[in-house]
Image (cartoon, rainbow over all chains, first blue to last red; front, top):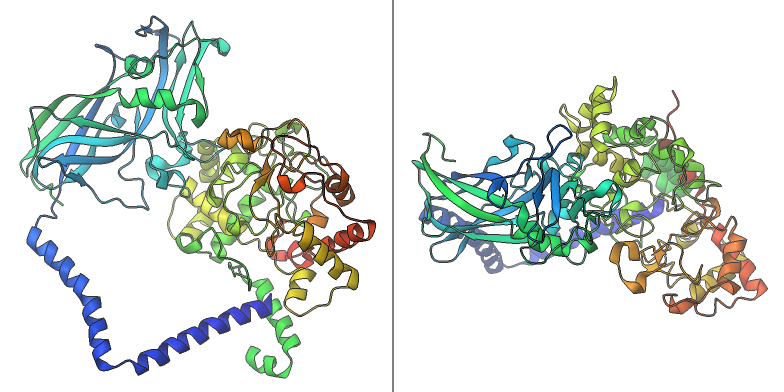
Length: 297
Length: 336
């Protein structure tokens, strides 16, 4: 092994040496070309920045309310039971509801999209919404240049790149309990509760939808803003109020009967729920509020 | 000085280099002729403090629910970090798992982990045994809490990562610095390949037989192609194996092809540890392969070896034992 190591070091040195020799032989004209090639992109980049002059971005806020049809969702507990009916008539209660929202984009009036740059090393831009934690339901979902936008898009879940990267931090910390332990991948959407129709132990409902692999269960949700554009201004802050309708989880695309599907613990079982969950969201309304001064970046 | 010695006596230089190496923090050096590793330490620079923290964690039962089982409990250095004499993993309270604790080395080259490949990245791998109810049965947030409340870990994490704080990323990056630098590449076979050692005539015959009959799956130099195959243990697989992950019918009963490096030390064998000796393993491949719909076609009808070839392969397999690796003091349990 010692010799192997010495050999590989040696070959690297030879390569460097060879490169040096070549560059010494390069003519002045070639070198000028190289210099031009190297600097051109820099000039171009600088130029773009100068022309746009609009790298300043402004925050946009999201507020999410979980509902069941027209009623607010109340999480059930031992002391305060609370139950609902699916469109097909199955009864259910929810004790826990958590999901990831990520990859937010804004649609410009001309149909093109604005997506904020992502820092691959932090969990920024990945939001873990917990129906039991009001602090997780209102957040700045992205920053964007001033302008009018005609809709938002986001992913319900975590993209493939993050799903198979190493151990992440922040909201993506696997200690948050939304990471499958025996197989790589995040749980994108998790609902726990009970239903008298459930055939599982103690009539439980356990829906853990997510995971990576060949077919991702992350779904992209697009919500047009309708008649009111999202106005992002230095002095106006938009707040998009989303409703997440849990009833849609059981009928939006595929009808789910709780006697048949009550336990989903691996990606292969979750496709129908993933489709339905992506249809839970709608924009209820958009506020535009005066923005506190000094918030540009 | 090393260079001077090298001119005078290359063997002495090699020994001196080995001595220096033995006291240094392991780095991930790619042995000559090996492919590029899969795990990239660029985002997780190996340092002495980081490696030593990983080693401390590896041998510390604090990672299990009742502080009774460490990674090192089922991954013993003298067994090339497999679990000697245990068919399947042995969890807290003496509960048995369903699969054999694999040997740990050259993990930086491995594209995915576990017998069924369910884990895709080295840092994420330890989450599985820590959380598994039949192994360490602990929750990650509890582990982080215990480490934060510990008398020594906060300082060790600070030393390893340059600032205060313990989170999952730091925990698993430190562990990766330890398990990712467990490199085994100094067996007699390796020294033979490097022209530094002779193998006996029988061992060389064994190498030839091996290359003809075994190397298509146990590919040199890592002695595995990291594929998943059904090697004919059962007509009806008792464990779905790779199909647990892919849900593909073709993967029923398929398991990772394990590396054969250090195979002499890593008994018992197979995903469920059913064979106690290498003799039994060879018996299986020669006349025990069971037909099934997902049997690897290369194994249909078994591997035809005569008695001399069988004995030669067995002798060759023992040249894959890396004594330096299993005795490397840098990887040993810390006794306090």
